[in-house]
Amino acid sequence: MLSKKTKYAIKALVALGRNLDKPPMQISKIAEEERIPKKFLEQILLDLRNAGLLYSKKGAGGGYSLNKKPEEIFLVQVLRLTDGPVAMLPCASLNFYHKCEECTDEKTCGIRKAFIEVRDATLKILGETSIADIIEKENVLLIENL
Amino acid sequence: MLSKKTKYAIKALVALGRNLDKPPMQISKIAEEERIPKKFLEQILLDLRNAGLLYSKKGAGGGYSLNKKPEEIFLVQVLRLTDGPVAMLPCASLNFYHKCEECTDEKTCGIRKAFIEVRDATLKILGETSIADIIEKENVLLIENL
DNA sequence: AATAAAAACTACTAAATCTATATACTTTGT
DNA sequence: ACAAAGTATATAGATTTAGTAGTTTTTATT
Image (cartoon, rainbow over all chains, first blue to last red):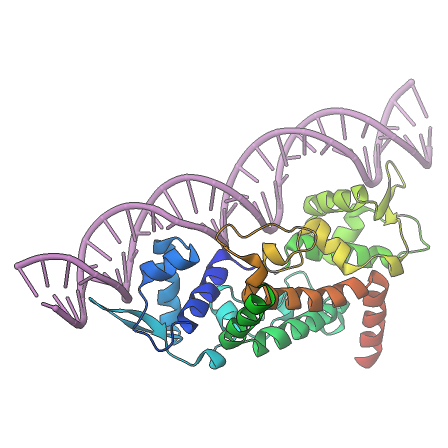
């Protein structure tokens, strides 16, 4: 399961992706629109900013906006930033690898092999789906649900 | 990430799958071979037994064995039993569905849609990979690594 | 019948993680 | 000067994870 933090992070990015050519969006507004606890969101946005995904401006009239094009922010980046590994086993992770302490021979571990397959399948989707894709999906769904 | 519980459960099932036509295997032996804390493993095996995956026999000469063929035990069953949902979002889960509290319209949520794709990809692999497959994978890997 | 082996059951606990909340500080526009 | 807005750090409560301990029940063997 994703942490709420990651879910909120994606929601915030989508909200900002919809706000592209407008003035920066305030934390309070994002929190209200997306129904996310404000102080929690504050921390999350800060993480996203420090990772270079967001631009922020302090003071009156300040707020947040995307620092990259929505087409260039992929789910996998967000997930790795806030949740860590994509893989379901430490020994099957590309970016957060570490050995299973109890494992005696990783090279011949069938469980690991199976979960590497899962990782690759997951990674394919999360690595290809951008914030822009999510917004596009929502636009399609909106029309379909008229 | 899988919990250690689930990882240990799969390891135990694989160990028992290798022990097919032999007398039942004791907890201590599985714990030693797979380097799993014994009392923790005890609880896990009990869960697997109560779910019908294992047969157990008490008393001297007792122990555990598989209650199904290794070809009939799939990773997804184990994972759901010990970890719960396969999906990364509650609203994208088939067996453990529940609404995201903050969500205002699930039908048009693009995030949900993306994570349903992830779930389906994951499910395909976990639902097709059996304990027998894992053992087979390991046999192949053993030969390849000679 | 006694003994020992082994699983079953119940309860508990320590540590980590998650989900926030609180407080104080800094920057910026008017 | 003042208010709006982000920055930073600390902390607290709840939940989950991972594991331990102790006792009871069942079974095979002697």
